[in-house]
Image (cartoon, rainbow, N blue to C red):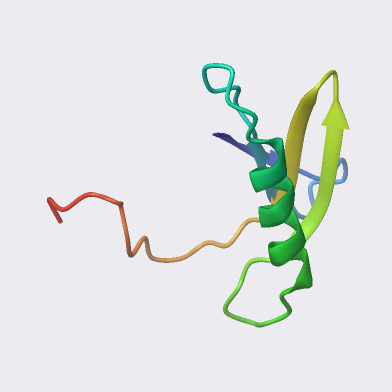
Length: 79
């Protein structure tokens, strides 16, 4: 996936847009839509809010609230 920083048109809310990238002919759409369903069903102060999901031109986007805070995991064993 690719991650973009965005904001609402009135700049009152900062957002993150996650775009599903194609991966060598692999159909990731079902996995992405499952992720969207799970994230959208969560309602907890420690979990980012799913704002919207969009499909356009065969590409899928997940819009999430942006949370400013401490980065706690890089996915790397180096830290």
